[in-house]
Every structure is written in structure tokens, then in C-alpha cells.
Length: 168
Image 1: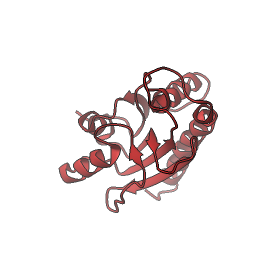
Image 2: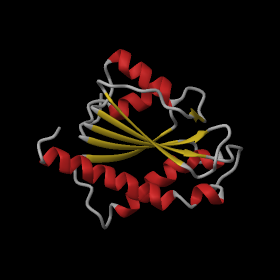
Image 3: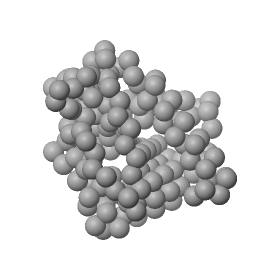
Image 4: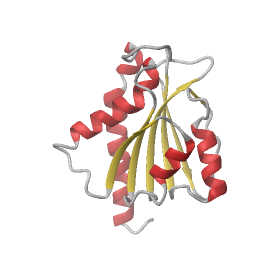
């Protein structure tokens, strides 16, 4: 049921809820870049609405899962990026609130109980300004999309380097 990929990238969100669509926008950019940058056959880029069962299905069996999602902090700064790293042995609690009814934190907690976490989970949570109905990211969030895609690519490269060096 889980992905056979060793690396999964999941853009979480709803493209019809303004800044909540940042995850799918980053995933689309990564797929576009994949045409001229080699991710390798061991990497899968997906989009998910944030449902915990779907998230677990996408990251199950992965050595590395990178999740990009919108978050809302109070007070917040639209476009600010938080990087949260978890591993199956040492779990922390994300400090931001998801824009979904059941958030990423609940998915992680459920996956931990069911023993369906990836070996490493890296979350890029982007503070959003607007989750109202509509399409298009606000300027502050749109301004960090390229940076987020670069960060995800760097995460994959660091993971591969660590594996090649025998660290994982």
C-alpha cells in the first residue's frame, strides 16, 4: 500500500483556498523542474489534501518524506518558512497550526501509533495570510515558492549524500 519510493515529496493543500495552495504549487514547480533536473527513479512528487490516511499512504515505507504545507500562526508573518524535522525515533510536535481540519500533527501522531512513519520526515510549513475561497497565492507566499522548491531539492541532495556516505 505504501510508496515503493525511497524519497517522497508531498505538497499538502487546497489550491482553491488561496495560500493553502502553496504545497501543490511547490509540487507542480518541482515536477516542472524534474524535466531538466534529475530527481531519480527513487523520488515521487505528490499532492495531497492533508487527510491523515492519504498522507500515511503516500509516505509509508519512505526513507525520507518532505512535506510542504501552509500554516497559520498567531501572530504570524505571511511567507515565513518553518523547517521541522522528525524521525521515527524522536518525534516532536510542530509549533504551527495547519489550515486543514485534521492537521499534519494529527497525521504524524496517528502514523506513529500505527508504525507508519517514514524514517525521516521534514516539514516545510509556510505561514499564510489568506485561506479564503479563491485561487492564487498572496504576494508574500508566492514570493517564497522558488525558495521552497530549492530547499526541497537541497533536502533530497543532502539525504542522498548522507546515504552514500553510509550515515543512514
